[in-house]
Amino acid sequence: MTTSCHCRHFLTVRRENSPPAPVAGALLIWDKGGEFKDTGHVAIITQLHGNKVRIAEQNVIHTPLPQGQQWTRELEMVVENGGYTLKDTFDDTTILGWMIQTEDTEYSLPQPEIAGELLKISGARLENKGQFDGKWLDEKDPLQNAYVQANGQVINQDPYHYYTITESAEQELIKATNELHLMYLHAWRADTPTRC
Image (cartoon, rainbow, N blue to C red; front, side, top):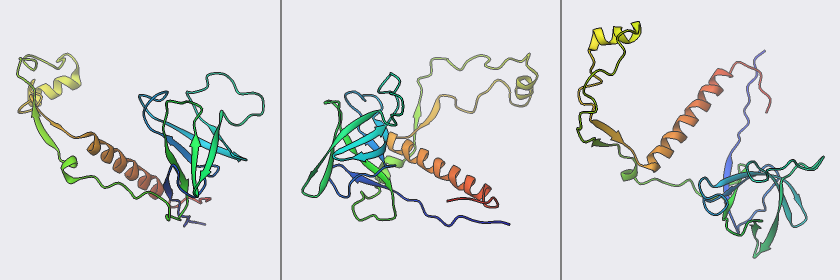
């Protein structure tokens, strides 16, 4: 018997100092800077405990957790004018907000729109210093030799020409390929019983 999952799972982004309150299971997102200077940071909210939010994370606390503890840090939650703000235990970081799984988009941030100019592919050139002169394939290797027999020791018509994209375009490309991969996985599992 084939069953299919008709569940809809949406992740919506909630900005710091906005309603509703964060919930267990939400992803907490930090900006780059301070303790997280190179990468930013992500944690999972595991519990709300009074005015505290307990989180699980990696690469911050480098010691084993006490027996039975299911969280790495507690962050203070402040409610002001109906908005929720989380206070980090580091004083040099910025929490951007949290992502929750819900269909309710009332307080969610809109998907950012990327200016078309930032998505253009541009051509560029390396300075010709002879770096592509000479052989680049090992003709003793049968597979590489087959390529040489068919095409010679030429990489392409103009090895000094290459293409560039902006960081914004790179992020959009990553997002699109991740979505395509998920579509493939959903299609592949379409004939498999699924639990939601």
